[in-house]
Image (cartoon, rainbow, N blue to C red; front, side, top):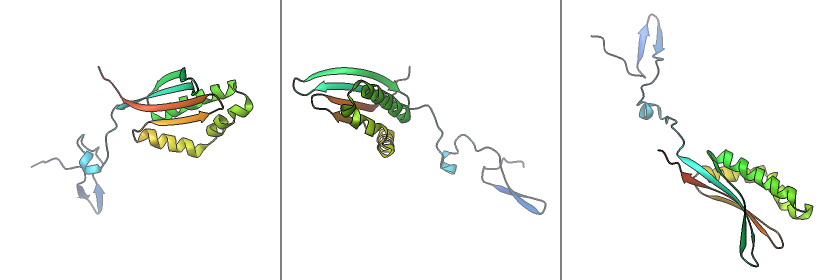
Length: 141
């Protein structure tokens, strides 16, 4: 009887042992421990906001929807660069420091990848800038 072999089954051919190298079946997740990579299940909503704490006014400085934590962080960094270019050098110093802080960026990626929102706030004498990204569920038609 000619029965199909399972994915991990080995067979002997001549003096050498070989492992079956066929592709694993589609339901091999349990056998291999690997997850199939399907479509992304999250989008990341990014925003840049300026606010004046004295009178409570807010000014939207841009919004974007990204498909991954890395793309969300890229947009936040680009927006921070645009904001820093428009500020005085002394006021831009905290933004520039954040732009060059690789450890802070790795932390932001880890937070976003875990499904938590990320916010970076820069305070000036009269204005507070917030760069935020938060995951949202992806809607399918």
